[in-house]
Image (cartoon, rainbow, N blue to C red):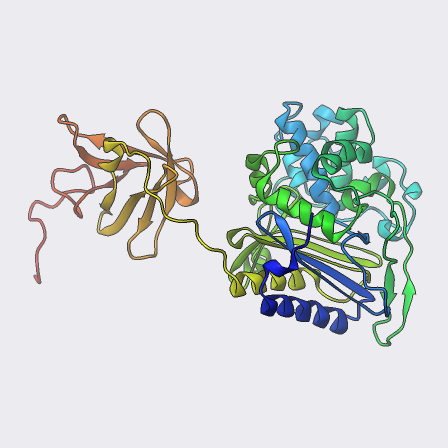
Length: 461
């Protein structure tokens, strides 16, 4: 992947560099590297460091912590797409004997299995994985701290279970399956389980003094699928492009879209913060912008990959300190800077090649009671329903093959919009999950709620 810096305007490049310079300086990070992706390729990269003359580039590895979970989720979705499992399957069906076999694979992927957030002590991120050689060692005597499926509760041991599931069904170690099925097809040659030079060292910076000490670099053992990987901005830029569009060699566009869909019950505080979780991906709202990706941290390292899909801009931020700059905030700002300074151009409008007259009969203005809606046929062959006031339920609909249309999102997701025709073939009204839409408000002769008052409309009584 090349990095054609000239594709962004000088002012945009300067603003991006300024943002990471502030993050490295104020966050007191020994080094910080970042990249921006647009149109499926990297269009900017930058770095700041405390070491004179040794500025890291896109080939230098940093530990990426929990971004590893997204890679593990991709492996599980591959197994599902091959028909080897169903996400509704209980874990016990494929990995018996864990003691938490009633949780489903979907529960584990979405952090809703009720498992504890961490392993029993000592702290698994700072101690050798050899201290926890078996799954029982990472689950402990009380693995469930919440009812299964009832709430979102982030669980590192949950992803250790998913890694073990991958190993069981593939008959090979998690890291070998990952390399064969994801890393090699996507060209992520600098993403590895153990560090491979050139790589950054991990540091702890003193909270009250400008001094630091090295952090240990432990192999996480069976916890590896939750946070073991090392990677680079170049590799994660490629991975971001894959998560945005899919790649049939690894996972289809439909399956990565499923990963980006909320799948866990949100707590009230998460709703207020604009946070949700899909299948191995975090969904956030920042400054009115929807962002999807994952953060990561391990002693000595901070990481974030985030995607603004509506703006076609993704960002990667990596730093080698235990605490310091907030990687998601920095990455979200990089997305915002590019999206606002250089918004993507809309595709040229083009008319449809052809339009079915029966579908054209449906478009235009409709009323549900006294609420006015517009129904439009879009270039992709979908119908889009929207309240003309700008406030109200909206949805797109796809044809179901039987003359009806199935809702794709919001309140009407999965509901069927059925055109009801008169004996002469003209459209009488639309039936949407028993809601009747008519051409006039409370149209006379239409089913309820139409024409229910014999005296009709009137003025002041």
